[in-house]
Image 1 (cartoon, one colour):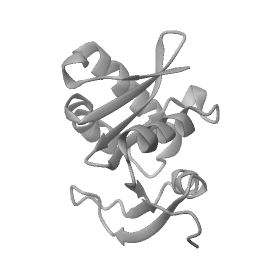
Image 2 (cartoon, one colour; image 1 turned 120 degrees about the vertical axis):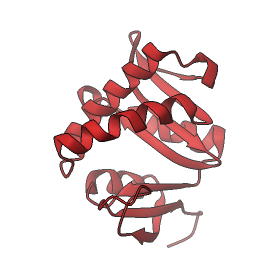
Image 3 (cartoon, helix red, strand yellow; image 1 turned 90 degrees about the horizontal axis):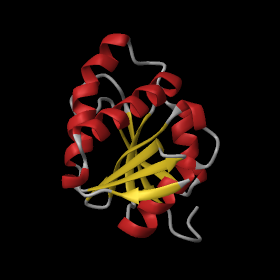
Image 4 (cartoon, helix red, strand yellow; image 1 turned 90 degrees about the vertical axis):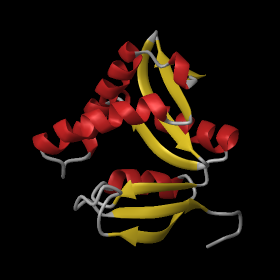
Length: 153
């Protein structure tokens, strides 16, 4: 697996579509609270986010995109791993890249996705707040997390 950072001008419509498919496979495996209508409604937002986010890293395996992470102003906005490679270290590698190379220190995670929240906690993030709705006002509660410092409880 290798990680490639892509500038906005390098993100072709074909690449964005491929990454949106990774997102969809990931969401179908982990976001069981989303309906088909929710997924269909979110897909254009995901594509726009992929095209415009400040920093984007893509994990490639044998020439195929298997995951991606996006950071804006030190905030991890997105991290998704293809369902076919979950548990293989792709998410851990992408998160480490975002933290080490781009200074990602905060993130929001769906409260209804306990596997993701547990992953981030395992990686050193702590919950520092909660919102009853997502950033668009939809009824998907978010946990606001911050990377803990060494020695913090």
